[in-house]
Image (tube, rainbow over all chains, first blue to last red):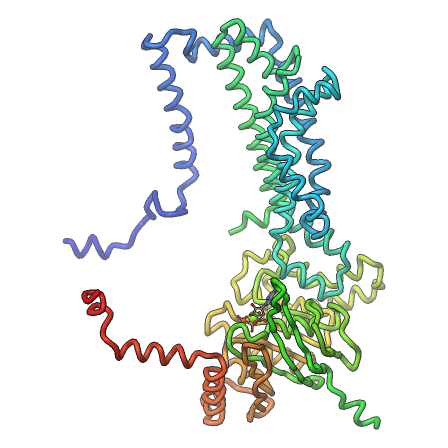
Length: 273
Length: 291
Ligand SMILES: Nc1ncnc2c1ncn2[C@@H]1O[C@H](COP(=O)(O)OP(=O)(O)OP(=O)(O)O)[C@@H](O)[C@H]1O
Ligand SMILES: [Mg+2]
C-alpha cells in the first residue's frame, strides 16, 4: 500500500515548487481571487458601519461618485489631460534618456562624466523642485510636465545605461573579431541586445511617472486626476479620492499590460520554449 | 630564402609580457612567452586555472594588448581584432535575437553594411553558409533562435559563424567547456573534420588534457604565477585521429605526463599533501570534542 503511493510518478508538480509553473487557468483564477478578496473586505468593512463614510466610503459610493464625475464633472477630460502630462513627460525623458544611457553604457569616459552626476541628482526629491520649476517655467502646462520629467528622467538614464552594460562581453568581442567598427557594434549588437531590457525599463518608469502626477498637479493646475483628488480632499469627498486613486491604478494596469503585449510581439525569441 | 619565407610561422609570439595593473602593484599574467605556430597547425593550450591561457589567446586575437613583446601574424604586428582571426568563446556569444542562419551570416551582414560585397559575393556567401550549416549538422535548425538549441548545437552555430569569412586563424577559448562528455566527443571529431576541410590555423584553450592531446598536434603547457610557457609536447599520434587512439599507450603515457606536470606547476601538490596530512592526523570530530 505504502509502496504504491511512493512509487507512483508525480503527476503534476507541486503548486509551490520554487519558480514552478502553473496553468493559465489557475493563474487567472488566483489573479481574480487576489483582486476580489480585497474588494470584498473593503465592502464588508464599509457595510458593517464600523467606520463612518467620510473615512471609508463603500464600493457602491465610489462607483456612484465615479459615474457622477463622468456625467457632470468631465472625468474623461481629467483622464485625458493627466494621461497627456504623464505620457509627454515620460516620452520626453525616453527621448533623451535612451541615447544618453546608450552612450553611458557604451563609453567609459561618458560614464565617468555623467553617471556620478546623474546619480547625485536622482536622489534629490522631485517635489523639492516645485518652487524652482514655478520660478523658471511659470504656471504653465510645461511646469507640470517638467516635474514629472525630473522624477523619471534621471532614474531612466541610469537604468538604460545598466541595460546596455548587461550585454555580454562575448557578444561585443565576437563582432570585433569579425571586423565590426565601433558604430556597427552599437547599432548591430548593443542596441538590439539591450532593446528588450530597455522596453522593460520604459514600462517601469512609466509607472513612476504616474506616481509624480499628483505632485505635479499640485502646481496650480485646474484639471487632471491628481488635481481632482486634491480638490476632493478640500471638500472631504472621500469617495472621489477613492475613485481618482482607483482610476489611476486602472490606467496603470492597462498601460502595463500594453507594454507587456508589445514586449511579446517585438521580441518573440524571448518567449520561445 | 623563398623556402624560408613559405615556412615562416603563421603566428609568432616574441617575449610577450602582460601585466594587469590593478592597484599599481601590477599582476604579471604573462612573462617571456615565446611561441611559433605554423600555418595549418592545431595547437592546444593547457594549464592550471589562472595561468594566462585566455589572456594569451585574447592577445593573439587583438582583444587584449601585450604590455611588452611582439605578436605577429604572417610577420605583421597585431594592432587589434580583425577578421583574419576568428574567436569562439565558451558561451553567451550568439546573438539571441537572430535566427541561426542570421547568426552565421553576421560577418557578411557587416560587410554588406559597408557595401563591400558585390551581389555575386553575397550569393557565394550564402552558398558557403549552407555548406557550413550542413557540415555542422544544423540544416534543420537554420530558422531557429539560439535559445531553442541545446548547448552543443549553440557551439556549432558559433563555430560555423566564426568560419564563414574564412579566417586564417581560429582562436577557441574552452569552446566545449560547458558541454557534457558525449556531446564533447562528437564536437571533437567535428572540429577535426573542419580543421582538415578549412586548412585554418587553430589555437585551442582547454582544461581537459585528453581533449588537448586528442585535438592538438602540439600541446603547450602553461604554468601560473607568473603565467608562462612551461613545456611544449609534440603529440605522437598520426594526423588522422580516431576515438580509439584515446586508449593507445602513447596517448595515456602523454596524458599522465602532462597531468603530472600540471600538478607540479600549479601548486596543487601542496594541497594534496595538506589533505593527506589532515586525513592522517586526529579525526575532526575528536578535535572538536577536545576543543
Ligand atoms: N581584465 C583583467 N584584469 C585584471 N586581471 C586579469 C584580467 N584578466 C585576467 N586577469 C588575471 O590574469 C591571470 C590570467 O587569467 P586568464 O583568464 O588568462 O587565466 P586562464 O588560464 O584562462 O584561467 P582559466 O583556466 O580559469 O580560464 C589571472 O590571475 C587573472 O586573474
Ligand atoms: Mg580562461
